[in-house]
Length: 280
Image (cartoon, rainbow, N blue to C red; front, side):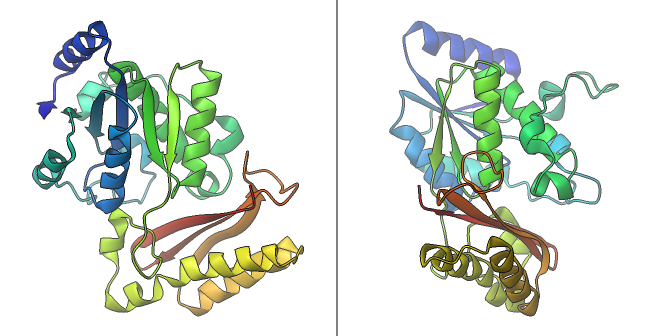
């Protein structure tokens, strides 16, 4: 496994592989790797010749008041994990490698259709930060494919639209959400939960399952189902950002039974997100 921190070295290695005809699969991460990340890496191994994992805590996707400075940075442990997953290259850039001009925010990439709704509405600027860093990583790594988890469904759709609109020759592969035995979606922020919060946290997934099942049983008053979900989470101690039912393809108004139930809610310091597809 090659570890690279300097952009020029990355370009040189990518050029060597491209010249040899090797396909490249990218798994972008913030680091602090858990089993969910490693499932993405394992999936990437089946989709190309070379697997590249990026580890970069991207400052532009953290909005004011969030945990950028405190976000767990566990590079040595991350590298040890990746040694067991046949990763070909780990790219660990510094902030100046991704954002070379310290005096200016530089060029930004936004996806307006998905930027200002749901998590984008409560975290203004977050998805512009995501779109910008992913675009820069795509330009640096030049992958043929990239793997993203379905846990952040809005992000997944945003990346797909970015690739489509900017004509990137990259296939975006979605990997199912990885969960604990009690249904809680794996997340680096789960470690912020204390014991009582951890016991309450699976209520998020259970609530989404209940809403999904009620839709499948024929209930069509989506507004009432969203209010039910919010009330159930609040009773379990969550601070609810949203519980919503949206079209699976673009997160607009649901037009048929191919929809997705999405939620974001906080317990203490941990902001948890999750989703479940219905139909489709």
